[in-house]
Image 1 (cartoon, rainbow, N blue to C red):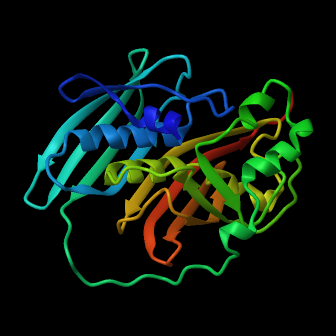
Image 2: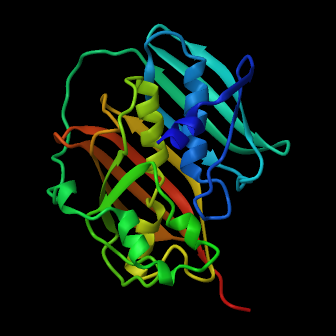
Length: 284
């Protein structure tokens, strides 16, 4: 958990300019959820008062280089009476690799409704994903084995366990419980940033499930194109959250996935949507 908190603790370089480090998750490039979360942190650092993010929308422009730090430039677009708007550009090697638009809102009371949380087994009845991956370590290519089996700051517990190295066709839906391992400070930004980080984990591969294609299949080019998160209610990322995902469509080498994140009490705390590139290259 300390490594994750360090990842989100950006270094201020100048007014509205911050720098972040990277964590290798075995993809060969910077994890999209990391860039999204760091950009959200950079945006919030420029917001005065108790306003918290209610929506954030990002576009992935170029793959991130794991060996280089990322510099975040924040544009202060608007400071209104109820809402604050920020735009963040992530830079590596002099080029924009990602941009984010985020809006922050004061706390208000109002009308409320939501769907019912899906009925799934409790997290205590499910095995951690890391344990499942370690059990199939012999199927992981040797160069990736240390990275994919390393300790994680977030405990993911899939409701439907799958083998990413030998998948079978299934419905384009997925549910997983997750929470940070350890207790976090009460700072709302930290909990929002960790949810944003986790919201990109395993989301896009949901669109591959009907086709029986694993996200590490040979010839598959997989990349997030855009990612959006709406934050509806306060929550804690060190308490169990249920992430329910579904992919209603894939066409033109692009897959669309949406998700809903619930607290254990059944409150819908966040909604997620993403489109990504899922291109199968034919062998030459």
